[in-house]
Image 1 (cartoon, rainbow, N blue to C red):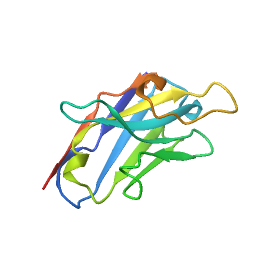
Image 2: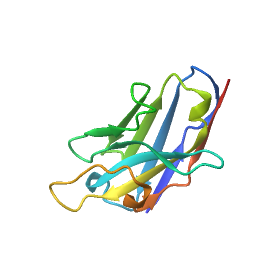
Image 3: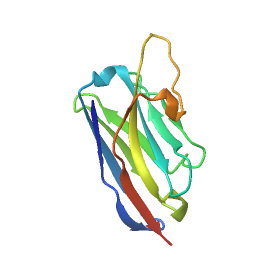
Image 4: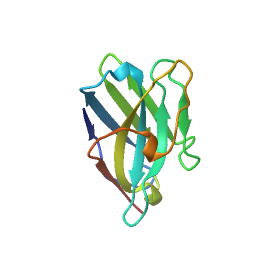
Length: 127
């Protein structure tokens, strides 16, 4: 399984950035896809997740209204549109995948619930 994140960079406060994650080696349409982030010296934290078929979403409170997660099952890709960026959003952003094992499932926000991880892409927001 490979999750390849891209789109990070150096931006200014208030700017927008779009991240992409290309997945391979897994049945994409049966996985919850998520974005996490980790700033230097801090624990990895949940950002957003999206269900595989009904496209239900879950967001961290800190990004609600500013970030938007989406996916394209035909392209095996998940995206994170980040608007109105703040210096506190600076971090390495990781995409992650969690297999759905039953018809009824919950979108989880804990890193341990996700089996597959990408290498991360750095987003730096200058003030």
